[in-house]
Length: 270
Image (tube, rainbow, N blue to C red):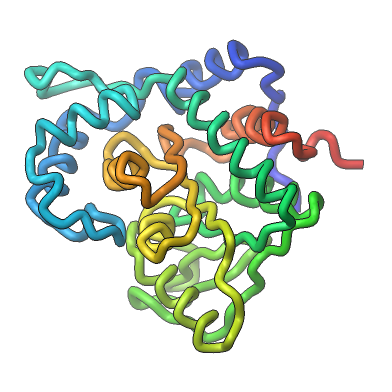
């Protein structure tokens, strides 16, 4: 299975320019109002916004969440900025890709067992699929389909190396940690080894990190929980980006990530 072609980013500057031009970073589509609303919900203990993590009473101040998001994601730091445009710093995106690349390189060196999952089948699936193919080629073992798993009124499906949620005849967007919980519980129940590394987003990443599994993920500026998790050490890396642009637009980002990790990308396959 191949993704739609797009020019690969040959340098950090080329990728930064691409991120801004496509609004994967820079002036992103998510509004300031939406971001602040989600930061407040996390601080008030709404578990939906915790993405499967247990944050206890450590993040009850929305101002502290905003400060963290300005530092790690690049949203506007000014608490008086209440409406309109918000941002993701593309330099922070590329810095996080470099940190993720180091994790991928280590996984390849150690022939790790890796699990991929996404709550954005119409967006980030393209990234996960390409990284999965590169890690398999490098000698990693990818977690195989687990049959008859159900969560959130749907079925956990496995397509092109990536776990996703299927409901009502289609793959669906989900923030829920429950599908990842079902996968990991089934692996333990069946005597299968848990993954050494999870590469995911939303609650798929949050729940894996909460289980003590090495986890890296992608998150939008209105999903603060994974950035909190990285700050606290339960997630290794969280890459800030708009997590639902047309999938072919992520191709330069994926090419940069795989190149930085020393892995062959889609355009380098024989």
